[in-house]
Image 1: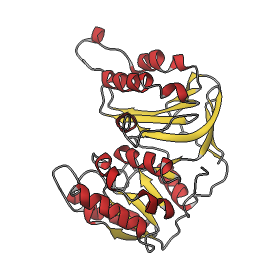
Image 2: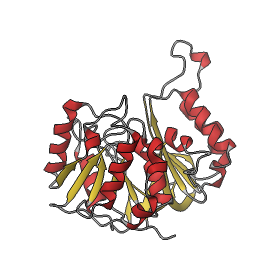
Image 3: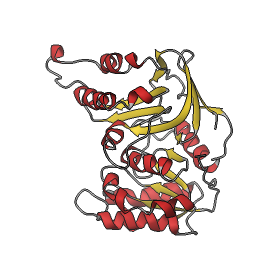
Length: 312
């Protein structure tokens, strides 16, 4: 199935802000709206941005209905997830995937949004964008030109031809396993990739380039999740791997060095035996600066020379 590329956004287009996952802190909402408006877009604020059901941005029914409605509405040109959190996996059975497939739009977000990226890429056949989000990064004082440039180029130039994904200045990618590979770029947050296993929305890794990142997971839990992916046979299907940021992913026991393995040791023991090209320290994830990724597009990685090129 050839991947559809959503129509590029332009100034004056209407963007919907929604939360398919967690509840948005009230004090961040207006600032998030203003940040998107400053980019030149008209903003429609979904009810889920202000709704709350415990830790969710409203009930499952509300979050699913709103996402369906935003794709169905011809006056909405793009959809930005205002934040991540938790909850996107709960609404997957309620999404009208056939309708969404017929109405591809720029869809942007990351973290818990990974669950939606996987489904829209695989079941609806269009490219989505792993990007920072309005209520989390857009309003931070550290939001930098590198991050803005990658985000804006991703959503306003979706037909961008061949180009390289390059780290922020002064931050080097590093080789884990040398070699070159080409495949469709998929993935996102490791926890959400792992959570898809054994469900109707399980990630397809056959011949793909898998990007992974995470936050607030100790090394033992990362080990457990990567081990599950390996035992499932999924990792063995890959063409290559990109490893992003692992923010606050420290040792299990900070008081006992002998009771810990480093993250690099876990990668060495679980990923290196796959004998496929692997690059680590890609500037992407729960970190600033961060690049934006076109999930569903074809990339060629050269782990020997530490380069990533979008080729389709």
